[in-house]
View 1 (cartoon, one colour):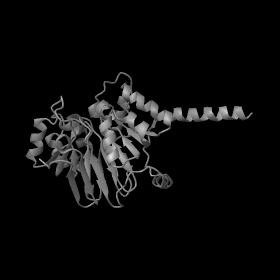
View 2 (cartoon, rainbow, N blue to C red; view 1 turned 180 degrees about the vertical axis):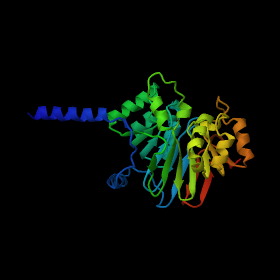
View 3 (cartoon, rainbow, N blue to C red; view 1 turned 60 degrees about the vertical axis):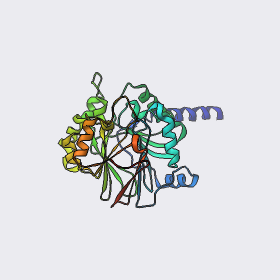
View 4 (tube, one colour; view 1 turned 45 degrees about the horizontal axis):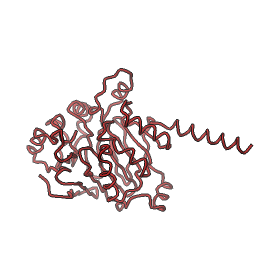
Length: 316
């Protein structure tokens, strides 16, 4: 009888793990009890003091990986490429990270989701967010299966959603639109992953930063049509590693950033950042920081002022 009960319970647990996929409702983060447990067992990183934000664009080669730490949560936006996993591990260890409350994957290209296997094996991951658009990428299929196996919740993000990063720090999602997600979920749809990127703005008091994934002019135009008055931000994460197909003049005028951060690998095959994009940044007299020249780029803020601290060199 006991053996039958054990088998029955095991089947129930297996079914629950299998069914836990990417839902449509974003979560707001770990509960207070979960946060207390994390602090007690040392699983969380050395978090900033309340009222402070610590953000790092990690030096992980050509891919994207941006670490955001508040006094309550650790968030990672993108995970770099498969062949840069050792760099990702090293950067997260230097930041004291053991547990990541939220992982946001902007789109399923390898240089953005390539580190998921490492994260799921070596770090505690609370929940995962992506754009809700299905992909045939082996890396995408692999992490989705791993999430189900581990019972880690996954949520689809769309324009209008707002995530709570704790300590009065929020992330407002501007793209993809609900219509775009719906179209992208149909068979036969011709995908354009860069222009299906999750894009949005982190807001902390008067400080803000625009995150663009690999969004190009097409997605920028979509955001301008819907959210032009909301796009202004203190700092811009350059779209598509500083590609000439991103960061259009009209988009830059709407965001009005004071500084731009570019994630790219030294001597990369794509020529990123492109001279056309750099020319547009310089025309606006923006402070320019690149991971290939500056290493990991750190931003700290108290919600009023902010400081940008490059690991190497200074702003261009």
